[in-house]
Image 1 (cartoon, chains in turn yellow, red):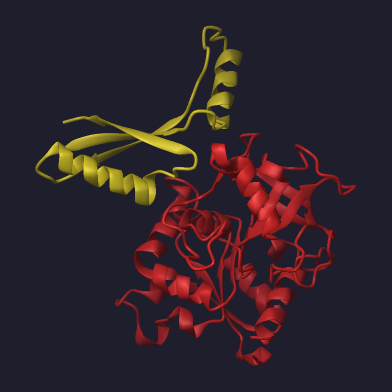
Image 2 (tube, rainbow over the protein chains, first blue to last red):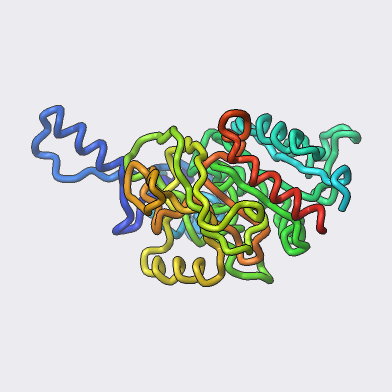
Length: 80
Length: 266
């Protein structure tokens, strides 16, 4: 099974990377850009039987390493 | 403890890069100090004479740098490796009153580990991180001297020899140093830190006033530059005292001298 884990900032947490990118895009003339936010994706190949099992493991991975719950949250998307 | 019994370990992994000058600073103050790779504490692939345990030392330091390439988040991988194999040892070390210092990336490691803010005396390492050091408001790597006001009233053992409200100048060099608490608990945490005497340094301008950017290089809440745990023996700070050690900028010495003074009394 392959799954993408998206790590994003919680609402209200400052995102200087997104802000700086937005500024640069607008400078380049992309006037339609309203907002930019950053996120990080980890594509994880995992050898388990069911999606439930995988989700449980990913939850633990996020808790132990991938996410700092003070500022971040995550969501997952199945690739295959 | 006699000064020649004191032993300091500066723990490195791939990507740390301030360990040499940190060791040198301790040595200059007259104590034994050495760089130790994290693996030396747990791996069985290490030669016998290079194996180490936390019990061999009286002080553990996590140095500055970019441990594990700052991947995932600054300090996250270093702290995950600590957590997986040495959490109990480090917890005992802290509970026994031995000093633990994190400078810059080392501060990020202690935060990701849950050793700071360290509100709980009986559980010096929390299960989850309780704060974060996030990307500077400027979105830039801020690398320059900063003024810091010493705010501690005597709990922090790393600033014993520094006068109250004294202002020092240490350099910062980081991209992720903004002290951030859970949004709904910001005020509560600042208040707890204050009432527990856990705030050690705050960024100030050249006149000693709490000011915004560029004096506060990262946008830290309450201008916080360094904090200690509730016991006062674990400190993390973003600025680099080891880079303000040699003539003519020697104010950083006081950090090393203070912790040595503390260890002498153990």
